[in-house]
Amino acid sequence: MTDAVPPAPASSLDLHDEPPDQGFVATLGAAAIDLVLGGREMYSVFVRTLYYVFRGKRERGALVQQMFEIGNKSLFFLCITMGFIGMILVYQAGLQSKRIVPDFTLLGATYLELLVRDFAASIGALMLATRVGAGIAAEIGSMVVTEQVDALRMCSADPIDFLIVPRFLASLIMTTMLIVIAGTVAFCAGAATAYVAFGVSPETFFNARLVDAGDLTTGLTKCIAYGAAIPIVSGYCGLSTFGGSEGVGWATTRAVVNSSLAIIILNFFISGAAFLIFPN
Image (cartoon, rainbow, N blue to C red; front, side, top):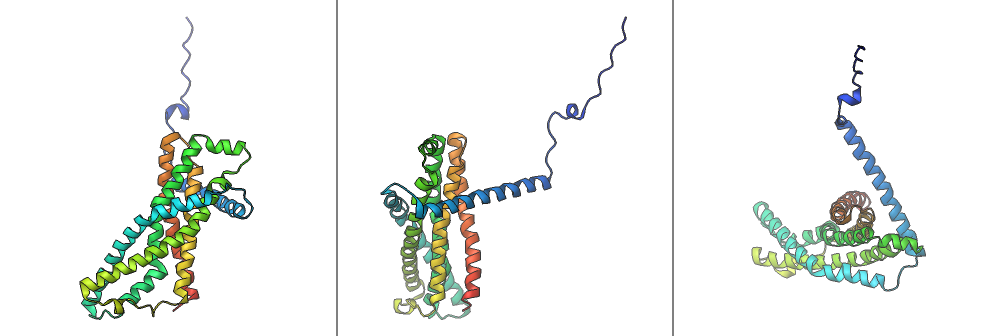
């Protein structure tokens, strides 16, 4: 009768069927690495987009089509949204002025300055990010999962040139125009609210003496920056889509979130630089 062979000692892999959970530091580090890699790839998309703006061979008529998709189809939504926001802002500002100093002579002038310098561009761009950004990511993401983007690469065509550049140029133009129109609607809606709620005449409300060149420059800079950020971020999210229809939905969500975050970050830096350059 032979002696029984003793069982081999259990190794560390045998004792743990599943890998140990990552700690908080490891999770935070992985998130930071993903953020850095994503930022580098997004920067690459931005640089290649600027290159193809001047050296590209994009399809004719694509720019006009994207201007219609981004601008004309967003006009009603943006004007309605900015109109209601304008009414809310003026009403709340009027209530606070009435409690402290019941003088509404500078209500319109102050509101117009804030609208030109920040509110119109920032709020309007956030609204556009929800519609335009989601549309760009969904459209490009659908082309990725159906292998249409791979077909473009096989034809020696860069997807950046044919898909992102027309949307980039259209967004630069139409974002500025939409924000100007929507800002005008918001100001007129605020004037109507001030007249109905506080008896402020339109002659008193339509006062532009507080708006200077610094306010106009800051507002225009924000329009251009936001108009560039939305298609770049959304296009990158669309090109990085994977996993079928579920991946398209995830890319759309990422486009809206990341575009809104980019707008907020750009607002912080542009506003800080503007206060240093134009202190008054």
